[in-house]
Image 1 (cartoon, one colour):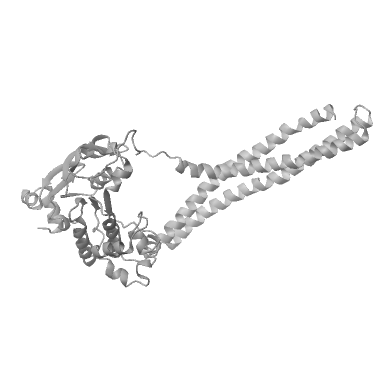
Image 2: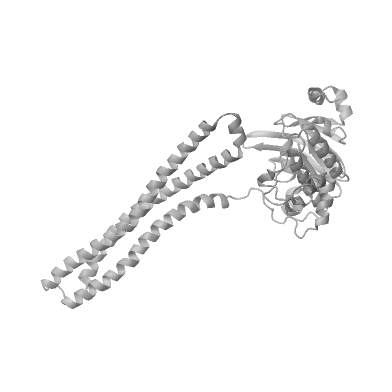
Length: 421
């Protein structure tokens, strides 16, 4: 309709775009900082709730409240700045739209009145009406841009975790571990977290059906051995072999399906007792769950609960005692019925009575299984077929309880400190 007016209006678009882009850029920066502050605030909230007893015991309420108030205030300031910029985008786009229309009316009106345009007065009014209809979608685009920037800032934090590559994956051509029939071999194993060397040239075997215990001071590398066997990490030197084959050549699913793990901290879920014992197993027979609980010395206390096996045990099993949580973990391992069993200090945090019940359950669990036992309490592993003593990541002694005790070396010192004979 009018090349002059169209060229005139096009001049305003880059100006408007630069202004909106500037706001959007600052909005994204504020949104990123806001998400970071919110994450920190939620972390403090979760820690405060879960650590409520410790906070009260150390009379640290004022300290925790002060820390929460500081981060909450930081989050408030950042959020306020972000909201101000977000709300500014709408009015600013409205203002810019009206400004453009007014400028077009003034410029175009002069052209029409001075007869410097081919447009008649009626055509000019039509042009303005048509042009005004373009303003609304353009404003919506600017609003969408600001919303996208906030979404991108939140998405970046989530995707940074989701897109983190898994360092331990199935290798090309990995085969399925069908069954475990011979032995587990740790061969010249070396491992380091970053630059800190934890294991140094560790070698030993676990024949099928035997129990091997790993002992040593904290930081000696005991739990790392269990993690390497489960292939939560890959070693920097040497390897772990099952059936004479490096476990890196097996698929992760088939490897871990051969193993059952009972850790020092019982990992339970906010669900029923039945669901926790049958975790990861579909269409499980309740009778099998009850039988597993009996083997783990858990059936008696479960039966006395309000709804029996359908009782919800709370977040992380908070409605249970430490010994009860551990026995449910053992029942879960019994139900899985794995040929290889890993016990990582499963009784170290229990009282004497609970330890006796749990230890009895563990003895039942280890029957006819290949077991790797990591223990702080040496009284629980005296009947192991072999005891491996680690010191600073290296094997310094190995043998039965009697032979190691008679050597009067590192193991004897550990026993003397615990009054084990």
